[in-house]
Image (cartoon, rainbow, N blue to C red; front, side):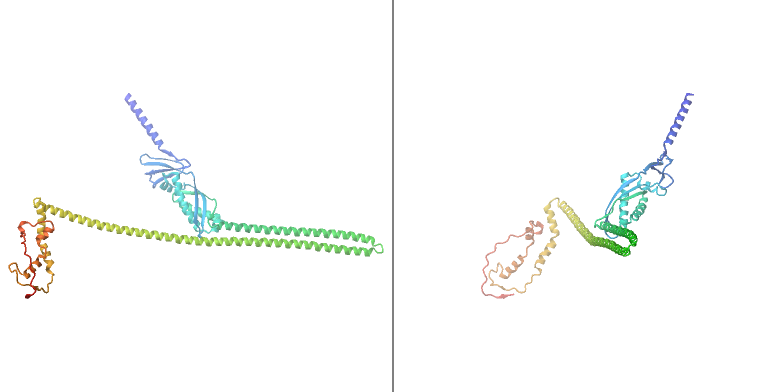
Amino acid sequence: MQAFALLLFGLFALVVLMLFFFVSRYKRCPSDRILVIYGKTGAGSAKCLAGGAAFVWPVIQDYEYLDLTPISIDVDLRGALSKQNIRVNVPSRFTVAVCNEEGVMINAPERLLGKSMDEIRDIAKDIIFGQLRLVVATMDIEEINADRDKFLSNVTANVGSELRKIGLTLINVNVTDIQDESGYIEALGKEAAAKAINEAKIRVADQERNGAIGEAEALMDKRIQVSGADARAKIGEADAEANAIDGANLAAVRIAQSNAERREKEAESLRVATTAERIAQARALEDGYAAEREAEEARAKRDLATREADIIVAAEIEKRQKEIMAEAEAEQRRRLAKGEADAIYLVREAEARGMFEILQKQAEGFRQVVRAANGNTRDAVLMLIADKLEELVRIQVEAIRNIRIDKVTVWDGGQNAEEGGSTSRFISGLYKSVPPLHDLFQMAGMDLPAYLGQVKAEKEEAPVTPPPPAGPEQE
């Protein structure tokens, strides 16, 4: 009974452990991450979950998380060529993150799984640099500077499409400032500022002119009304005095004086208004001419900068081409010289190996000859020389073979018949002029073996008496 209870307890503990193990393999995905299940998933290279939970089978499956936290990347693009071949600096900040959209999300684990944030930032930065240069190269300076919306939309489209290939999405693009090395954008800004200032000055002059004219017209109306009131008052006074005898004439005179004064004041007010209007027009024209002059100067500076940029870029391209060609030629020469050196080395090595084999075989043959001579090296050398004796004799014969003796004249008086005449001594001396075989061996520091003969001791020759002055002639 006790054994059965222990068995039940063991089964219960086993079930609890298995249940705990399976619960621990049930993984929940946080909202700021992507759960990547890889191994035998039955759904391609990996299974991605943005939120939710899934069971990860032991042994055949494993899991990792991809962080969805946005990554901020500072891109300080310098010297990018625009469509006009003007170098532009575009400092900007890009914000990217791992994409959790269906269809794109699978690219992230295939290319970014296991990489740190810094590695992902470097990969995205390289892509952004390339696409940003491409966008700048397809637009003019005026478009980049004036139409920022178009520039940002082009950047977003190009960069976003490339980042999606590695499972990233572009969240935001912030271009801080755009500058060029030749000052072209600054010249455009000065031109626009000068134009705006001139237009403002013209509007101010127009308003001042309108104000002066309105003020003059108001003063004129005031003076006219005052003059009219004065004239009516004077007319009333004149009517009252007309009851007298000279009242009518006095009133007429006063009315005439009032009219004259009124006309004079009207002319004065008209003169002042006309003068103010002409002064305002003159100032407006002067400001307009100054603005046009500044605009022309800015345009001339811009054209000069454009031409200088074209010349500098062309010179830089030509210089770079020459450098590349020189480097290529030097590399070709180096490779050719290295190939020739390798070939010479191989030839010399083959000759050395051949010479080594020949010397080795000759040494082996000489060793066999010494062994055949019972270890006596002198006899071995004599055997080798005896083997070459026929060739040595042939060389001796060849030494006198081509000697041509067209005519020999000997004066012989016939004395000393026992020792031979002059003719016999001449022939004997002629043959002795050829080195004999014994002398040849002696010059080599060797002696002929006894079986080849020995040299007789030379007799002491008696002094030869000179021939008589006269005798028979022999040929």
